[in-house]
Image (spheres, one colour):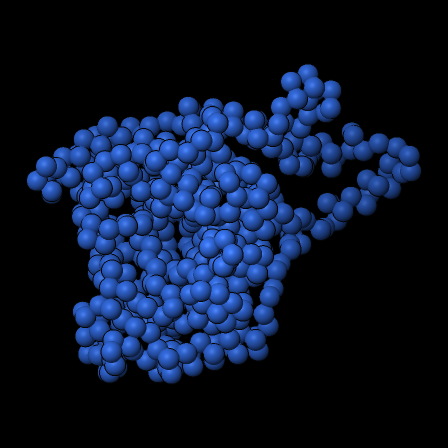
Length: 473
């Protein structure tokens, strides 16, 4: 086998070590603020650190010890207990979701508040699309009691797919309740062949907020792998320079790593960042091309540390699934596939991450399909080089009946599952549709055909009963 494959490299070893040195300096001299009394006590007891006004400084050797103790790979399963991926070894895996407040329908792309039925429909759609390996929390349910939105959303989350779940719970006081409900429905401990990856983020700059680190402790004690990822607004919550944003965000990530390994040595964790920029003229955050470079740099740092990486997904830009969004999704997907990323779990949102659209799920699935083909490269060997065929056919003749064509004509080139390859005549005959119109219609068809799981009705009944009993409704 002689496979040629494209690769993207950003930093050399000397530059990675320089970046690491800068991060250690921030952690040892500036430190991070830890807002949880329980975690502060734990750090003081186990590491001997002395907080000053809740600010903790970590010695380089403490950081290095945490890096060494974190697992190099993480095994992820689906809800049926089947092994899905070994994060840290496999290629980049993809997922959909974001905690959206609005839903952009696939008929005319108008907005409405995010409802429970939208959660159900989006999870079923993502479950039917093969390149989405995980399904993240897709929105905050707003047509139920506000206090119970996380519970009802999470109930739809687990009831409509068997794929691994990336779990975001907006109300920190409901996190344990959601895990209890999942465990009740699953019928066994969640740490046994884990299919749930709770997602946590600190507050930039350099604040380990109580809600985040306390939930981390809860998840780790239940045996769950966790994602610890931060979110910048370069120029506001981080320095405006790419190197400055990388340094600060990496310091936060390694602080989170130290805390995780202090809670339990060997606790499985993915680290990553969402390095967006902040436009002071419009007061909006957005992905710049250099955001993707910072994410690539983070992936290379994680490869250096041998820690699984959770990358950007390219989401948030555009006004739905439009040309603006497509630019960022393509750039992000290809760049992270060609570098060292392991998980990109948040595809699907736009309008500053406030809304989510099923058409984005479908179009981005096309992007991933093509990007994976690009990433796979091609075989460069005697058979595939076809030198003998070229000699046999010679100048001016056809390869239509030659072995290489007959062997490969069914899969020798990309065929879209969404967009027909129309000639001009066929396009006119079809009524001159726009690509956006075709995408909407395909999305509608996929959503109508996405099946409910056999256990859906049972799970919903049990979950609703759990919620009523837990909260005395």
